[in-house]
View 1 (cartoon, one colour):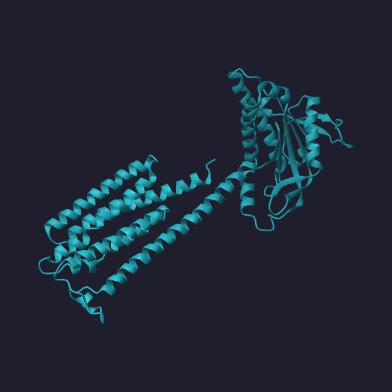
View 2 (cartoon, rainbow, N blue to C red):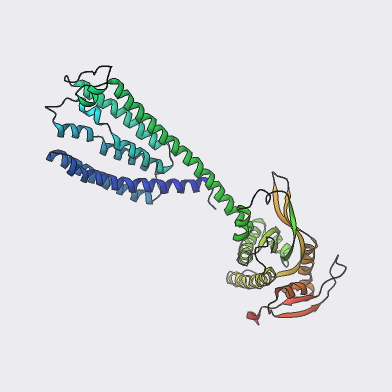
Length: 429
């Protein structure tokens, strides 16, 4: 299971991919737009070549990004390519307007509005450093253009009384320049803040997504969704009495087998076995309450989502037998001994809910039905059956299932043992 950091990285990767796609389209549009709005063959050719070249570089960065390497370098490179592409536009506009007739004050009045678009698009990456970098480059470039303007002897300062000279004439009003710089900084920093907030929001969403994924390790998907969407009352300590089916399974002779295998091999065996069994239980809408060493305690009907819990529990038991047969076939091919499984089923009322405190909760079931299911599983040692169920389970299922009568066997700690039936897999008969 991927951790929050890996999941967040995936979101960043997706955002960077969107940023690059946007830059490919934007740089192509930029180059083609130069053919329409820029006069002079040299300026048109320059913008077209720059746009196509930048689009090609961004496409190459997309290919590199697909390999999931050097993401940060790719992000910085995308920002630099975008900025280098749009930076010449004020100078080209000045050239098109007529350098010999219009003083360099013109360049500080055009500004670099496209830079703010790049700044906004860079926020898609959820990396505040990219819009911050665009903002810094834009401010530095505006100061450079101001230096270009004042390097021209034709440039003069406008009066402090009005900005009209700055807007309409050839003069430069420092107040207007400061206003433009301040607006650029405020807009850029706002985008940086938005990117940071979005990153924190996504980080929390990723953590919740992982928590939901972890829930699915313990519960069937529908039960996990029920818990994930639960209101405050559902998450408090306490519960309610429900009529549920309890399934208890155990591996025969596991203790001496684990002693012979050793810790590592034992854990590997358990993981292989439990993965297959839980998959079957979840597929039938059950929940794994806990693992008891080599045993499994599963429940059906704990949330009341499905009314056919008994039939689902019986199907799960049959499918567990089949899953073990498949596993044993694989083990035989590896020249490993076969595993033998015992399963007990019972139905009855149980307290279903949260046990613990507000800080640490455990969703579990409490009731005599759990103890009785365990005793029924142990009775498989006497009958030699793979699956034993109380008659109450079979009757509640209301569906035809192949069974064999086993009578009321003595069960340790049970005063009135129920009538037991062996569940037979008709597909194996």
